[in-house]
Image 1 (cartoon, rainbow, N blue to C red):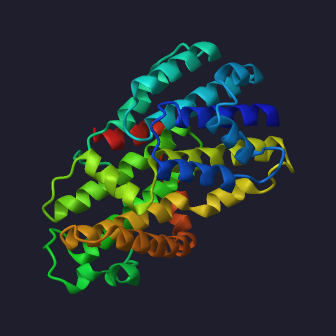
Image 2: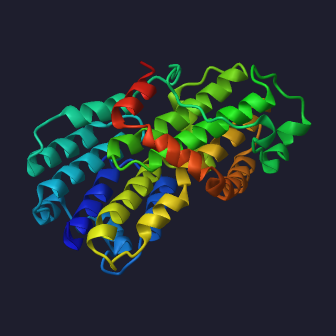
Length: 333
């Protein structure tokens, strides 16, 4: 796969991200930051591609002919599907975009899109009985002091069905699992990270007596600054640029593959989401937007520091995962 095909795939990803024309300014800024952050070489000018898409200077008709290999055309379609599914539903505009893209790329099978629908729309309340667990001594469970400093700790707390140790273990297990999924090459596997994060927040709220719906959880994630589309775009973009261009292009992006694996963003984001959500619901959902954002930024920094410590567990867990197992786990089947 050559650099021209890589640029075309990334452009299609960005077109998919804006296919519904319904991105909040906050999500637009996050997508811009993702494009900026993925830039490793001027031969792949991602900020420039972002501007071309945002200013409507490029269309599918301009991009698709650049994809000459079967592998590149299939990958472009799969990534576009996952980006449109990242927020849990596909709008009429996104469905039309994907339909047109599928026809232009010659991707006739709807099997991949159906599996992506299954992941994105999975019930939050479904118990994932086969979810893998890590074994770790209770005294070694990490617990961020930043979260304890939130006002909810000093105020009268709501009781939880879980002890502090059990809650810390639940959050750590979820972070390690999502970190393991991030190491897998399949796009469909990567799409599972978002619903698993949302399910963690749902289960934490439920432990404090809250019955949450998908809309509430999306709002909480947006308040924290976690964009669903931009989160998937970052994960998939890193895999694309590191796994493909890093191998074939030698020098074009040198070493990004190793950086992507060591970044552990899914581990850190899940760890921070869990602990901030825990304090938010413990305190009766009274924390201000600024408190939540500040806490998330501090705890995600803790998560990044912990990532290296739990890298061996993530690597070991990833060896036992595949797309079929992840689909089963998300569905709770």
